[in-house]
Image 1 (spheres, helix red, strand yellow):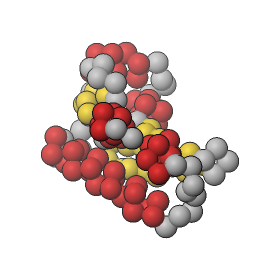
Image 2 (tube, helix red, strand yellow):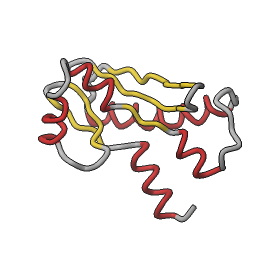
Image 3 (spheres, one colour):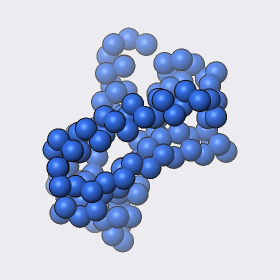
Image 4 (cartoon, one colour):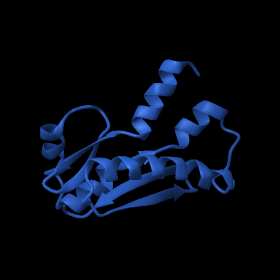
Length: 123
C-alpha cells in the first residue's frame, strides 16, 4: 500500500465531525454541514440518521493492509478498534466538550463486517 492510499483510508476512518442541530455527524466525504443536514432530513429522526450516516466499516481497511488472512475473533481486533475509538473520542472532546456520545462496535460474522458507529445526544 502506498502512502496516498493509507492517508485516504485513515481519513475515512477518522473523519471530520459536524454539529447538526446539536447532533454530531461524520463528514466523511467533505460535503459540509448543509449537504449532511439535507441527507439527515431523509430519515425519521436525527438519531436514525446517525445510526446510518455515522457507520465506518474497517474490515476492508484491514484487508488492504494485511490481506484477507484475519478473523473477526482475533484478539488484536479489540486493540485495532480501540485505536479508532480513542481518535474519535479525542476529536469529539476537543471540538465539542459538552457532547455526550457513545461509540458502538459493529461486527457481522455473516458478511465479515467490522466497524464502529458514533451516536451523540443533542448538545
